[in-house]
Amino acid sequence: MRRFPIKRRKSTCSHNSAGGRRFQDFRRRWGRIKFFSAGPTFGVPVFDLTLWRRYQSAQSTMSAGKANSLSTREQVILLVVSQYIGTLRAVADVQASQSRVELAQALYDQAADLQKEGVGTGIDTLRSNVELQNEKQRLIEAETSRETSLFGLSRLLNLDPRQPIELGDSLGFFDTPQPEMETSLEQALTERQEWKALESQLKAAGYEKKAAQAERLPSLRFDGNFSYVGTSGNTTLPTYDYAATVSLPIFTGGRIHAEVVRADLEIRKLEQQQEDLRNQIALDVKTALLNLNSARNEVQVANLGVQLSREEVDQARDRFKAGVANNIEVIQAQDALSRANDNQIAALYRFNQARADLARSIGQMEKVYSK
Image (tube, rainbow, N blue to C red):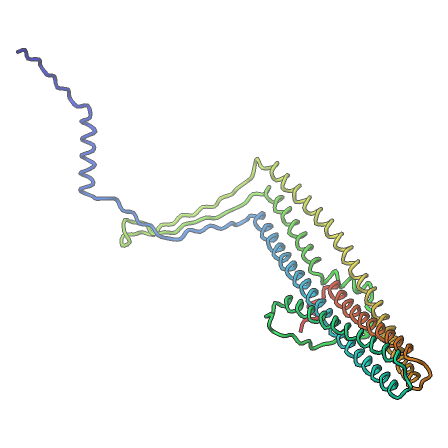
């Protein structure tokens, strides 16, 4: 049997094995390294005009948001007031219809009595009965319209649908002096929340432009740190460090120019919107003043028309009772009184709605109608 010699090679990692053993000995002797640090860190910009301009822009944007919120609030108030005035009109229609039904019933009773006495004719009684039924039908329609308006008002006020609503007002006429055009326009440009919001947006855009221009300037910042450092909480030492940093933009000319141009475009757009809003406010004020003056004259004419129609009904009744004429004149006088009542109610509604529109156009909606 032949034997082959075996050669043993020496390990080439004897140095690494020794280093590993030394590291393990270090860990067994000293353990893991512990480090403890606690303290505040602070930093504050000393001079940064860009941040200041953006802060001013944010303040103006917040003011614009508040103004827009108040503008929406005034719009909601106008909607509620308009619905309330419309409901008052529906209630007035019911009251006028009830009055006409009572009048038609009295005229029908008068015609029936005259027929029984042999003075009147059957055709007169029939005409009176037809007019009475017509007035009753109008009363039913007016009552339906009133209930519908009350439901709409309850929905706008977000009330319980099962809760009944009782109106404490009625359509009225307040003969106030006609406001001046120039005074109303100046007041509108001072009090309208839409105008205030647009002015705040213009200020915010101007501050954004200044902030972009201020990016060319250097900025100064101060940072610091104070902490306790040690291996444990009982062996800490106080340490601190601070630094002042000056930043100077060098290769930012193109970006800054683009931001300035974009801010200029935003300012031009807002200025165009401001011009359009000025014209819209002037149109609102002029239209409201014209409608108010027209409605005031309509109320005066309608009141006179109701007075004359009532006199016509009284004279027609007297003539019919005396046998001078038949009740055709009475029926015609009734119809004239019905139209006069409708005209009066419509004129009062337009007058009160014109007052609400004027208050909205000059920015005094909540001030005038809040209780």
